[in-house]
Amino acid sequence: MHTIAFLFRRKPDMTREEFEHHYKVIHAPIAAKLPGLVEYRHYPVREANRGDVHAHSPPGFDAISIYTFESVDAAEAAWNSAENGPVQADTLKFIDLDTMITLPLVLRHVV
Image (cartoon, rainbow, N blue to C red):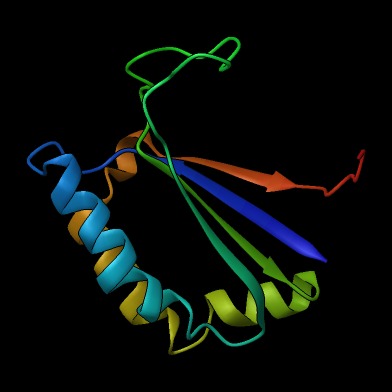
């Protein structure tokens, strides 16, 4: 499997509500069309609460998107596909790319 995560903030002129609506209702269906996508998960970041060890409030980021493909070749094909054009165009509408962090991941099951 080939997994990559994107940790990001919303555009500065967006409210949290506008951001979360766009992320869930508009962006998710567009990104879900990437060819070869095995799994696509959203993790909107919530405010820190009891039980959140080492967490900061406010958290500093708004969400994490995690994309999983069958292989590096499948991921490369998806990012180079025609379906990725709309994903990238929409990303520019609600994500602050200057602060985004990209994390290539390895899954390690512990529990």
